Length: 397
Image 1 (tube, helix red, strand yellow):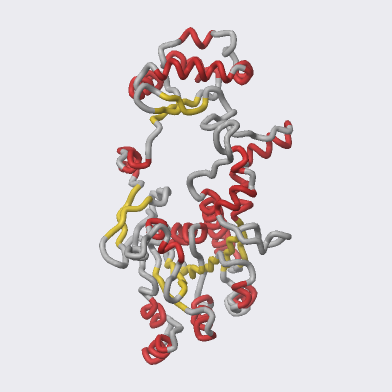
Image 2 (tube, one colour; image 1 turned 60 degrees about the vertical axis):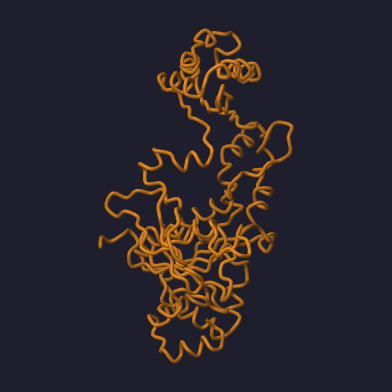
């Protein structure tokens, strides 16, 4: 079997819900061995998200973020459970956790406790409001961070109520920054042999995605307001209704503006005195959108796309999720994959969007049930059959 980029790296995963599981799954797709520590009994609470009482605890939210992992179910409120966890951490290359601040310390599983015996360990922590500061202990989730970060203040339609971004963007941005941090720390350790802590948070990660909005605020004092589908980096730059649906058009400069007019069959519009330069288009945005909407509304989406694409204009059909699920381009990219599920069968999920020419990502393991691999993992740690049996009888595992 061809080695992957993180083959031989053991990750102990104390994460749950979205942010942390995305990080550990990405490392697993790169070839790391990931051992997911779950709460004895129910496991990761995301297992039951959106599931009715008569459905198995293997939700879409869980299936999407937990392949390439083995599951060990522990009661960490028992001393023996904490000892099992510590034994794993002392043999780990990487630890990632996103519990509330202070919990790992209370269990004696924090970085300082583990690094005394495993100084090369890389210990990643993903928090809500950050690892320090007045709000570090504040409870957080994606909605809370979208609100606090400022994102929701300019998401939605003009003069409308605030709107949440449809995906858990604060969670997922934190998970991706977590991966970046871990990979950097692994490179540092390869050069020096030294482990370290890596911190990121949902708040910092979300704010980082708003980078140019903050730069504009500090440069010009501009506080962004909701623009619907529009983007003030270019005009037109939004969704337009067609005769049979919607499409998005992005003309970020004067050249693209002229080509978009030609592509829609109205080349004369490019020379309209109201629209001949980007500053003028900013000033006359409402009129421009009305003109473009009149044109696109008289054409089908296919007709619009044919003309615009012939001119090299950035544009696309506005797809629904089911249309993307059957999209040819995504299929050719291998964007959707089938993974085994521990309770039987397979599930289709979104692939990690990375392509290494020499060390490709792979699905080496499916999505486990709670504690599916407990006995195997403990045996590998050197636990005897008698000790494993005793831990089971005492309800530690």
